[in-house]
Amino acid sequence: MSLTRLWLIGCGNMGGAMLRRWIDSGVVAADRVDVVNRTDRALPQGVRQARDLPEGPLPDVVMLAMKPQQLDEIAARHAARLAGVPALVSVLAGVEEEPLARRFEVGAIIRAMPNLPVGIGRGVVALNSRSADSATRDAVAALMAPLGLVEWIADAALFDLVTALAGSGPGFLYRFIDALAAAGAELGLPADQAARLAIATVEGSAMLAAASGMSPGALADQVASPGGSTRKGLDVLDQGDALKILLRETLAAATRRNAEMAAAAR
Image (cartoon, rainbow, N blue to C red; front, side, top):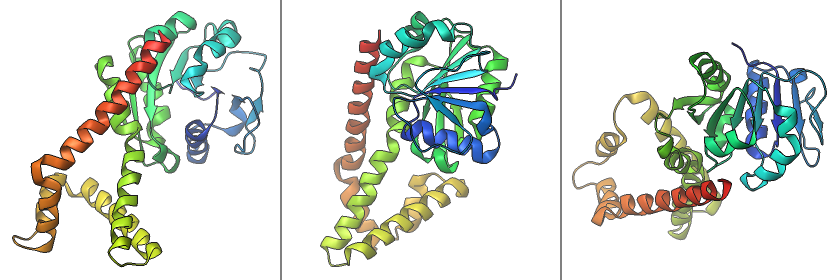
């Protein structure tokens, strides 16, 4: 089973990043894609976009990439036309499989949670499905592979947490980079130089963490000599598990919001 004919309903920042990466990697041809948007957006050359779904045969896969709050509107407008689509992929945060199944009569429903670095092929795509068979799961995983790390989440109950960690994670990390640069600037560095140093430090550290085979905690200890400056800085972050508590509360808040959106979609 291959997924090469694609319809996208909604194509904002995330949908657009995924689409451009698919086309750049050759997994999907631009002339095999139709996009439904409220207004025209800058899309790769050859991609068709309109206000309504095209006539003719159904595609291999439809991806819902609009705002979760638009689910009922989209279902009322397009569900009849989408009946019988082999695979429906939803990137709607907080919207579970069962509410989608009530609205769309399709072969299989797959929840997907990408994050923004998918646009450069270095993202994360979490997947979950109760209805997809092995062939469909393999085809969806192959479609997502050029976007970065693809992980199937076995327990649907954990998907809101995965969304908070991986889907929202870049936003939290960007805040950390910003704070690291701001701290350097407040202590005397030129702001633009502090920003460059912070970004390059995070980029290189992440690449090393991915390649080294060591845990990030072990790498932190490797950087920190006993009694040295790194250790003194880590002492601040480690005091009372301050950083762990902050991030746990951050993920918990995002997870709660995903659960609220799930309840609204039911």
